[in-house]
Image (cartoon, rainbow, N blue to C red; front, side):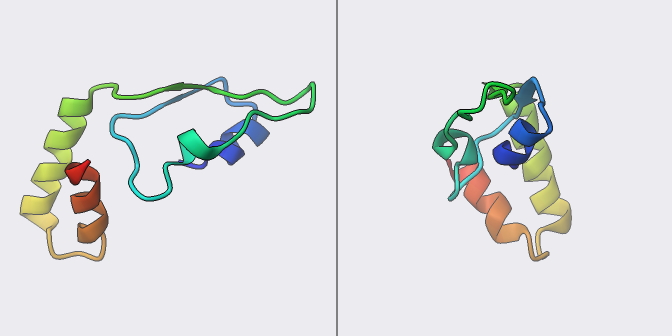
Length: 77
């Protein structure tokens, strides 16, 4: 998720299931200073267990792809 892009597009709310590893964008982006810009509300851990189950299923079915390391990092948090 690109929190900066969400701010530029005036997105009101960003919803995610699992925290992203490594960059943790939602925790490192500062609210904008300009009056017309908004900082979206960040709502996390929405259906987190369901998201985790989908990623675990993906590993079982497609686990040899280039994304495996990233998905394992997500699940390790």
